[in-house]
Structures are given as C-alpha cells and as structure tokens.
Length: 277
Length: 288
Image 1 (spheres, rainbow over the protein chains, first blue to last red):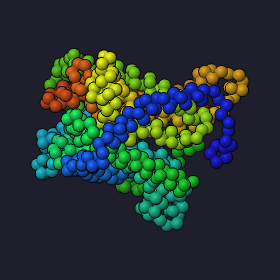
Image 2: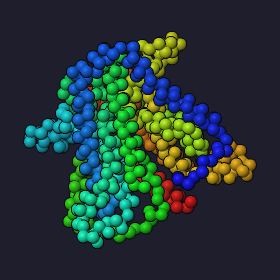
Image 3: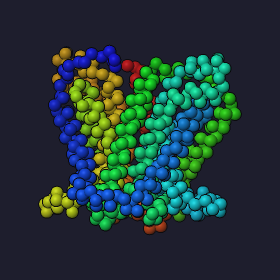
Image 4: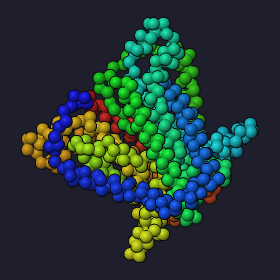
C-alpha cells in the first residue's frame, strides 16, 4: 500500500450509482443549504454587509466567542495532555472507567451540560456558593463561558493525543535516559516536540468547536448585551427579529473563520505527516 | 473517533521507562480533580436535582404528556435520521474507497464540512432555504407543506448536523481493508450486490454500527440547530433537549433535571456501547 501501490483500474461495479447518490445527497443536505448563506448575503451589498458585521454588539460577540474559545482550548491542551499521559502511561484502578468517561462531553447533549454548569455555579450552587463568598463570579461572565467550552472541547484533545502517545517507541526514551537526560528533559526535548502536532490538532478542533458552540453556553452566559453574548446567539437574535440578511452576514463571517480553521488543520496534518515519516 | 487498531504493538505490554511514583500520584491527582469538577459533579448534580422533590415527582415529570410527546418526537427523528445517514455513509464510503477518481481529497473534505458549522448556522440555513418567508418555502406553504416549525424541519436540520458521523468512520476502515476481497469475488463471477452483501457489509458491520451509535447519540441531543427550526411548540415540535430547556427557563428545575436524567442515561449508554464496540473491533482486526 501507500508509496508502492500501482494505480489500479476501477474494476468493481457500482461507481456511477454510488458516486451519483453521494453527490446528490451531499448537495441536498449540505451544499445547497449552506450556499443559502451566500445567496442571502450577496444582495445586501458591501456597505450594509460591513455595517451589519461591524456593529458594536456583533463585534463584541465575535471578540467574546474567540477569546473564550481560545482560553478554553489552551486549558484543554494542558488538561488533555495530562489526561492522555496518565491514561496511556500509568496503571491504576478505575483507569478504563475514566478513559470511557472522557467521551462523555461528546455523548451528553449540550443543553444538559449547559443547565448543569449554570446550576453548579449559581450563587446557591454546589461550587457557586463558595466562589461567590470569595467574590469570584462564574455565572453571567466570560469565565462561565470558558468553563462550558472547556468541558465541550476536552475529548478532542485527549482523543487526538492518545494514539500518538501510544505509538511512541520506548527505545527513544531509553536512549535519552542512557545519554543522561532527566525525565523532564526527555519529556521537554523529545516527547513534547513529537506530540506537538497532535496537541495542536486537538486544541484547534476544540477551538473551532468552541467558536460555534451554543447549547452549553447560553445557560451559564446570562446573555448580557455587549458583555456575555456569544456570536451564535447574535445570529439567533437576528433571526428572532426576522433580520435574515443580518443573520446571514454574521453567519458568513463565522463560517469563513471556521473553514479557514479547517484548512489550517489540514495543513497541520500534512506537516505532521511530512515531519514524522 | 474510532481508534485505529495497531495489531503489531497493541497486545504486547512493554515495561516502559516510567515516572517516579510521587510524580505519578500528583498527575493522577490533578486529573481526578479535573474529572470531579467537569464530569462527576455535573453528573451527580443532575440526579440530585432530579430527585429533590422525590420519586413521585420524578416519575410524574418524565411521564407527563408533554415529556412523552418530546420523547416521541426525538425517537421519530432518530428513526429517520440514522438510517438515511447510515445508507449515505455506506454508499459514499463505497464510492470513495473502492474507486480511483480525481478530486477524492476535496470530496472527503466536503463530507466533514458540517462539523465545522455552528449548530445555530445549521438551523439558519434551513430557515433560509425553506422558511415561510423564502420563495421556495412560501411555494411549499401554498401546497400545504410546512417544514420549518414542524417535524420535517427538525429532521432535516438533524440530518445536516449528524451527516459526517457514519461516513467518516467507514472511510478509514474500508481504506485499510482494501479492495482485494471484492475484486477476487468479481473474478469468481459474483454480482455487484452479492459482493456488497457477502463481503463488504460483514467486513464493515462493526464500524457501521459504531458510526450509527454516534449519529444516534448526536441526533437525540442536538440542541442549537433544532432550536432554530423548531419554534418550540409544546407537544408538537419539542424534542427532549428543547423540553429540558423550556422547563429550566420556567424555573421548574426539578422537572427539567428529571427529563435531563433520561439524556444522561442515554449518554452513559452511548459511552458504554462505544467502549464495547472498540473492544470488539480490536479483537476482530487481530483475526485478519
């Protein structure tokens, strides 16, 4: 396979049928509906478009979505790397149970996560009561949004690093050890550079997911104008006012950013494959 | 994300150069702290809140008519979405992995597109396409077909959101399996459908099931996209997550968490099935 495969002729049947259905279904469910964003934005003209997406409230929401998704991704990178390390390298009772629970944020509906965190951190909640006494406000603040996004993005980082960490050959670490490197040096100089592309991929996935996340955030955010309104919520409120063009304009900017993240991700993965082959 | 099995290294447990015990304890401790704050406390909270008014109230909350209607709508959605996306997943994976053609990489990227789209935008695009204020939507309305603010809208938005789940599990699996078996069957005179039913389908059954479970879990839990197209009409266009939201926003926390506990059960079931299937999958791949 791979490098040595000879380009073979297609001899199996069903190409026309399967390819035709693939293109049809992809167009009907994804491409045509997505193109509606463009068709609703273009008639606006340039100036109203710029006006719509640079309104102070919209700009504040972009800034909030990006900064909270960024901080959550950074937090997830640290927590995810640590979790992957512990789950791959150490043996302790209950390990498989914890490993399985890493996927819970994937499986748990976002609305449930949202009401859980909003209740946990409310001024009378299990954690909120203590934090309020210390004057730390989580609910109705950007910090609360970060908390929700950390939960949502966590599995992305762990599940991207785990397979890479599992395949690191122990000989490399033994060699470093024999040459007199400390554990920390080995980790810092040898393992971390090796894990870095996966770490970057995982956190980019968490970041991209965080920008668009809605369900888990709106309950804890409080949705105060200019303060804790995330970008997807701006789309929602424009829709509620039947401002379809405005909603499309805000969505278009968000989409373009998400797609460039996707392209960036592909670039990272190509770089990763070149580097370690 | 199905972990690709690596048969040559997986079963051998090597003794590694390991970290000193205090470091291990420290890192495990920090991880446990994270799990407590972000996984165990929220899970515990759901049940504590759900049962705060007792068993009777809990049972009443999950069996009252609006809750049951929500469950029915969610199940209907799942029953339509999962087979459609599974059928598409198999078809697309067949086209992509069994043939060479130009633009394959681009097509694969397009298949992942819905993952890069915010759920709210996923709902918005269908309002823009078939909402009552659009030309197509008003034409449909004149013919008595209502999509947005009714079940078809919820189904189609969910189709979009869960679109990549099955196909992205199948493509790497079928790429790894190659086409030798199918081509051998062809030379022995098997027909196209025979090849698919007797060779391809048994080979991919676990991966297909895995993708369908992920697709189903997301269909049950989807909130943002469904929230845009549903219109929140009680007893008609409320899915389980939307019902949870409404109860919560009415400060009926005990009922809200009671209904949410159903979703938690389903999430835990999903995670369990996922682990079980991954084990099955690794066992199978050793036989090859």
